[in-house]
Length: 271
Image (cartoon, rainbow, N blue to C red):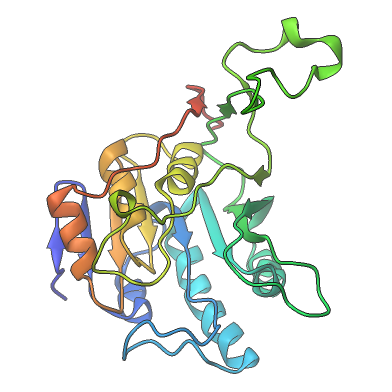
């Protein structure tokens, strides 16, 4: 199987992930990040069916999740980005396959329309698992929030502000600072579908890997995962069943600008 792109750090295959994943040997990858189609009936190209029955969609997801778990190293990390509706079932399946639950991360994204008779959906679910005890966990600190009008800090932290770490507060499981990818400089003109922010993938990669580790993304999309890995010095394996033109152009040209991140990554790892 020939890749459509090879760099000094990664390799990209324009194939179905269920064709490529079985060819990877057991326990070779440090982190998997998966952002599959959400089964909402969107058009991603002729090769992608985004309108399966509920049973078929879950069966399909379970298939590639099994393969991802197989190729994940002991202590490796598995991140699954999807709608809460699907991640309830898929998270349970990951537990049944032996993964260790670590976090349900709510990523605040207000892109949809209100749904009659329901609360307004305002977040996507990012599930974080590890294959046994995580071999790497790097703590992230975020800046203390301030008022955009007066620039004063929004919280007094119970009067213990002076005792807080000067690098910021610990990252929580609610990420309400992930910007949407709308401005032209942050997105590829060759891809009309939604694109993920580099800030989200930067956190995923920084939390779970060290330089030189291997990250796999079986649903490459616009190539955000691979772009982040190139910038952070991580090896990567990419798979995308649809057109890879946007990914190839993005990585070759470097024209897509990453979102600014003020995260502070603490230099320690759980072993």
